Length: 383
Ligand code: HEM
Image 1 (cartoon, helix red, strand yellow):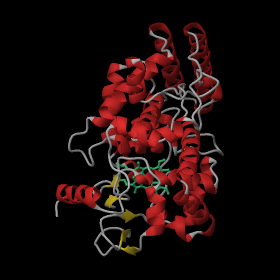
Image 2 (tube, protein in one colour):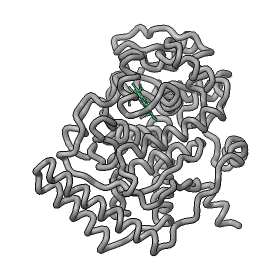
Image 3 (spheres, helix red, strand yellow):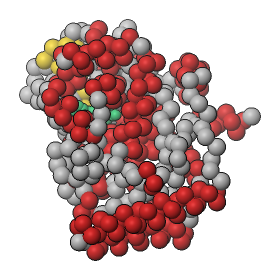
């Protein structure tokens, strides 16, 4: 069966399957159903900093970044690195100082691209953009304080070619188009903002976010092996996420992102979606883990599980660890039973993930922002 036939059959199954709870709804329906119950919980975004103070903050942070880059020079004795980081800071300073409204424009452009996916996968670029943001941030190592989204080093080989990043060229190329339109934004800010837009536009919770990452150079790229290997067990999952500074509850909350998107045989070797609504943020990943009977898939690919009932959904060995490990299972059950709890915990952990390794003084605002969705912007404009 070709992939497109398979995808079509999953989409059909999604439309008719009683296990399915959520599907892609028009934006407005979403707001009325999903979002209403969360709107009371989200605090309004802090007022945008005045253009002048925002500039000052940015100049300061870029100055600090340049100092950071100079520090890096002394450690690495690589003059080119320091010069390049300094040049970027100078370029931004001379040409343009973005405000919160400018970042909102970038968000809006990303949201348009997410929806303009045609026949790609399940009709949305949201999942692959979220994966880009996570793989850019998830290389962080708290011991050496290296990795993370600060320098956006996945732009460089060999990091771009690491096995775990297979297929993320799709997402990077999409964001390259956005960068051409908004050349002042750093890639780390752009990619993490895309992760935020993906979650929010697919009906997820608000993800606190603020700009301040800077572009680095190839020498800052991270070594292979920092991202998780899906064929492994609980120890490996813990080692990888503890290295980033997360605890067991946060690990379980983050992996719930697998409600979204799918595996691609030509990228990771694995195949298929986790849920029947892979472009909608739900806690279905946890619910299906507990409600369905999972069996090993009989095929010539890597070891993965499939649901016994429809054989159209999948779980990775590392996903299944969440019901095999006692501590993980406790959190997974809580998230299966309480979607609101998961949304809150997911938003918090994802915001933390996206800021790993970014020096606080680089951020243009002391508090992260809660950016409105495109729906919210449109209804504000109508008023
Ligand atoms: C133990 C941890 C994890 C492992 C082993 C893992 C592994 C994988 C694999 C093998 C794929 C399929 C890639 C492909 O074939 O295209 C995938 C997809 C995905 N992962 Fe994870 N992942 C983990 C954690 C996370 C986290 C923490 C997030 C986000 C917060 C995330 C978000 C996604 C998304 C959205 C996709 C779908 C991408 C698409 O549809 O193109 N994953 N993951």
